[in-house]
Length: 229
Ligand SMILES: [Zn+2]
Image (tube, rainbow, N blue to C red; front, side):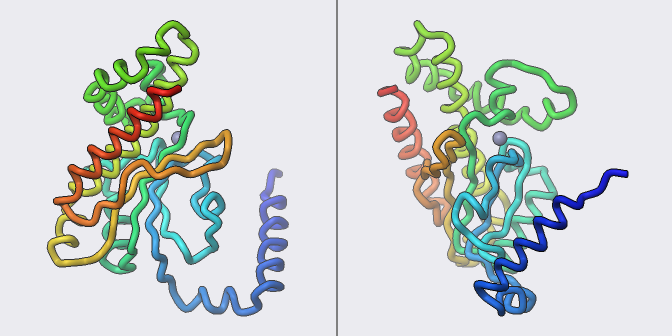
């Protein structure tokens, strides 16, 4: 019979190592959590929130789904958001995409995988909304089909993370919290699987008024990055 022995052994080693460094670590954590961050990222196994940011258990509240989508009708994501904002009172919310995201690639390359195609519909909309920007920005790569396609996936990964962060600003949870004067910012970022580096896409948005300028700045940044490829 198959079991999860490997995982259990790995867990015991991990817990032992932590206790050696900090004997009170688990006792302290058992008293409650007060994370500063909410992380909304992709389910991709290569992009674990804690590890890539050098954070330990207790530092970050996490929601992950395929292609880090923030849907205004996703009760799961909205519940995580509400709990993080209203109960945990996180200070920073990060929507993190990653280059070579399979969910984004599915849309860019018009692939089909069944049920999940429905989940990715909002990425198709982002592509359609931004098609002129993408084509203009990548015009100089048109002669090289492989490079063009790869750049198109990557630029869409950035645009997707940005748009999902903007979606967050439009949720009733965030609008209500800002109206009540709760102090937190919303960020978008992108992670490079090839080099392990995380980059900010948009400046922190701390109010509805800051949203447009942050979006505009992010689009200018994206354009500048891809024009010099
Ligand atoms: Zn992904």
